[in-house]
Length: 299
Image (cartoon, rainbow, N blue to C red; front, side, top):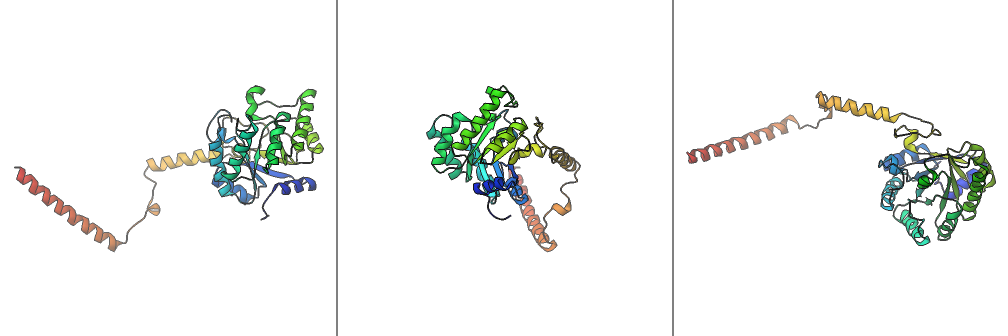
């Protein structure tokens, strides 16, 4: 359990039929808790744009934002494999931009690998990154950076042509050298078929139980993001209610004068306090006397 997870660990899990557990993290404390819980791999997802920064989509996320969050996560987790999303337009514009962006996430962010969205058109980018020694995870199906093209967060691969395209996408990403593939929001049977046809692990999100592993956004499974919850998410906690109640209780205690209590205060010894009080009383007496002299002069 203490061995560091690598891309080879995930490959071995696929071969043994052991499911891979993956969650997102964007900060130090969450990463540390995921590490302690035994998570296999952490995704520093561009979903942070929505669940942390409050954007409507992932598109406004920048490289600087990703690097900062990656640094926090890599300080908090030491055992899991840590993967970072490459943000919108950090790799689609040119192969040079893709190499530069990925290098920043590894060199500055400290992550182990990067994730890119897309199928056959993005395969040359995957190959270029892999050839440069950068581990790459693919992502097909519902790709959030293409949400405007899809017309919203909709299930993909529901027609024969769309299913064929996704199968071709999966093979293209594998052949380009990706070590794993995220499959999002497609019919479960299709995801199972793709998983069975690939030699690299698949990680499903809204793609059924037939994938080699599963990932969800941590804020969704903890009930922390209330704007909407995808139907494929199982809520393991309702932390929004817990935190809201705690915040309200704090406000009530402060307003009622019940916090802080004596147990939350720091204090002097009686002997030291007596010395300090006497000193300040002497100073105040001298100040008052000086004030009285100045007032008398004025008269």
